[in-house]
Length: 167
Image (cartoon, rainbow, N blue to C red; front, side, top):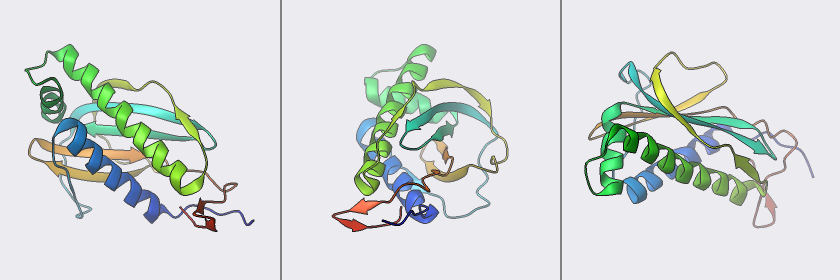
């Protein structure tokens, strides 16, 4: 069985699709992928991040403006959230998102991973980290950026229904 490096475009499609589905289902918010690389996202915001480990190692970050996280928490709680609620619900949403991402990567590759407890904080958005890929979205409450380090899966042969497939 040949070793394969995952295709970045396939991973990008997985991240985009899962982010839209989870956000719609959990937060009742519609995300729209931004195709313009020069999308002028705001400079300040909040960020949730975690590290994946196991059959592969990666880092996932989710950065957005506070208004997105506030409305996400409001929809999840069905009432107006406090500052603490916003942080708690952002972490819970990100837990679900990461769980779905790890499950989808497993479905495609057959390789398992776990993720650390997400951390929420305020962040000043900076230029993309060279080793990080970002997918940007817009929604009624602003912008959202899902960043992830490419999966170093050179020792993984991806499988899908018995056939080899690159991720």
